[in-house]
Length: 172
Image (cartoon, rainbow, N blue to C red):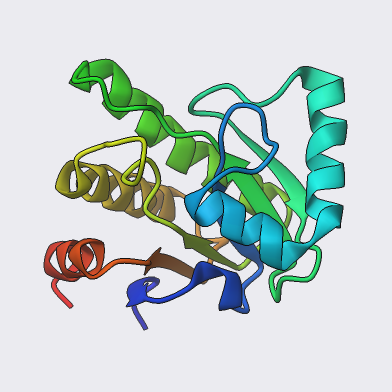
């Protein structure tokens, strides 16, 4: 079985060890996937995010933090902050790669076997979808070569455009 998959769907409905949330620096919820995860997951996730904020003042771009998953079917939510696209491609590409790498490292550190990613930074943050997918797939592939801990990584695409991009890049 291929350890990397892509699906079109709602990440909040997946039964995996970890769901990744494309969060903002404040960790206080927002729109898109962030709002959906907080709505479905319930107040426990927000309470834990508030405790993280109190402890460390939020989450810097490219970094990741973990909470339980509240009412979600997952065990954990890893909140990561992707970069806003401003056209400074080199710096923003590094930050996006760091976001994926830090999520994977945190998942393995918490004994996860399965993880699902949304399309980080491609919504209101404006990162070009194809380039974001190339970075995501490269980071996940490189990580899986070095670390055998994860059984499955799922790219859960909410929109058809991202799904088609991932399918083509993964040759599915």
